[in-house]
Length: 473
Image 1 (cartoon, one colour):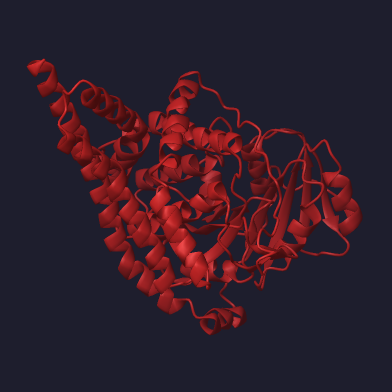
Image 2 (cartoon, helix red, strand yellow):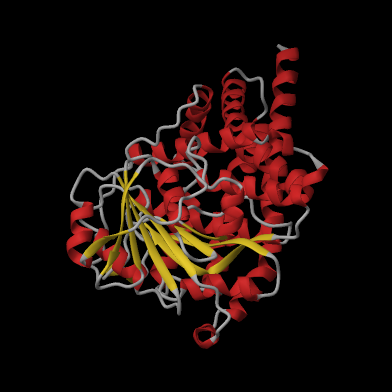
């Protein structure tokens, strides 16, 4: 019994040190994000951004929008993207073999007519049935193709795009009107920027009008509400901190701006990975490092896009399993970059952190729960050791989430009501109890599906944007 007790205590101590190291690194990212937030906050003045409208050096942008079976919302989504405040941009809508009335709605609403095929793309895709321009919206191109999935649709749009910068955006993502100006600003800095991403925020519970968030509010329901501080933690200090350590390894596929030429050089989006955004950025890092070209892949906090997050456990579980499965496949596919000094901070810091700190974290956490519970049940682990484990695994992370909420409140203050701030703090305190353990289970399932090389997405159920606060307003 004494030997078993010592072994369990040693294993628990190792797990405690693991979580202390991981969360301390997150703490470092938080500290590094503070000067980044301050810098971008000072640059975020609306007047300063609007001055860019008169600039002749703003690079034109192609907005790529893949769509599948979005008959009810597709027209409003396209109109919202066409109305973005930017001097020269086009919207390339890729109808990825929809079997509902998506294409018919587009054809009638925008008076589409067929045009000759675009220049053949260097990237093979599923067959394109036709290219269409609009008689009422000069900046719209519709690519109608056979179904091949999101990545295949983006590659078809990449081949049809005319402009040097491309913005990949989900058709159900609502982009702030001046977000393109704020995102393109970094490409005018004189630095060799290869790609940049903005902030994704939770649209559930917000008041939506004409495809825009008119009033930002935190959902009252637990499941969408707890994802608000989770997204803040991931974007506001997680990705901002990486800016100071050599750039980001993830640019969200729902809102990322890239040099089109670099994307073509690496073969566009991978069609055999369910997290095409992570895979794309990793391959871009590898490609540009191999060429020896100077470059940056940055995160900019003030360009904002809003998305509907899952509001039921089944859909959320599928999403988180898919995200982690894609992380596993990407780490395995590009494992040659791990601790490889050839790739600089990417190989020596970013890749190891995502490999050991993100990919393996659910495995280590599950082992910690099992060993600690078993040890307490049979008196083999001291209560102090158990409390240390829970403090390192759960309490430390909760404090970091709280700081992310406070950081947003004192800078950008996206949610102006005090009750929304209080609600975010409440969700940040509640997240480690139940919700955190569910995400561990969902992420653990991904190891089996990754081993079996599953590339399916699973059904992503959307409920639509409903104002949950009508009665309280």
